[in-house]
Length: 113
Image 1 (cartoon, rainbow, N blue to C red):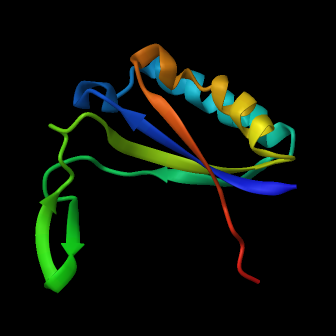
Image 2 (spheres, rainbow, N blue to C red):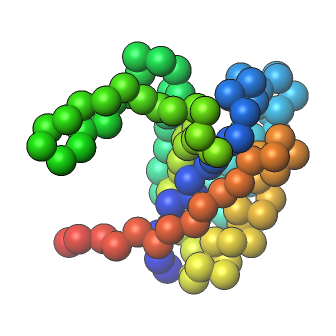
């Protein structure tokens, strides 16, 4: 089994605060993955609020972030276990973020032992 990070992106800052029903859908999705012993790390939410992020660029230039006026912003991530990226994609397809116009980026995790 390999590990994959599922990185969640939203287009609208208003979608960052889900309704109780949307939150329950997300928890159900996570519970389903955990019940299959495929949840490696339940991840975290990455705050997209002013003052909650900075970006360090070359020459130690520090800028404020995140920039929600750009096309999309990362709202969080989880790490799952899957046989290959195709299986990870199938798991990601069941995430309720799509009903809000969001997307999921799937990245294989290279483990350094």
